[in-house]
Image (tube, rainbow, N blue to C red):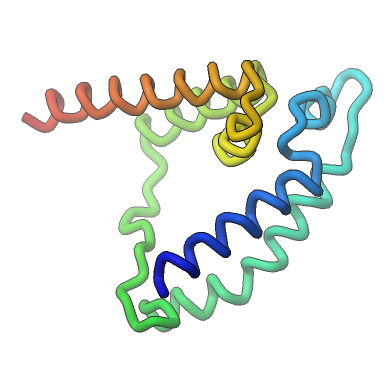
Length: 139
């Protein structure tokens, strides 16, 4: 049952990304182009996502468990540190250069779009390099 719920959630998320235009790099880059031909439509997508997630997040933060009774995986730290800021800058730069964030990149990669395949490969390489770095720092 857990696998079916995950599959249904992933499909719903993927369809939402397609319908909203988030899987289209031109639309995303148009949203990020504040000094040019700015396309504010993705702000509505983000506002809708926040609206949908707000009450369930409030509920799970109070309860601490999922609907299935499992422990919720919530961030333990609220500290804004160098590591968080650098990671956020890298994420934003990658989004701005590629026109994809990770979810839409996976959706586009499933359609075998070359730019998305390259970005997914770069994300996997970046995650692997970070894991190596993190192990060395913690050792």
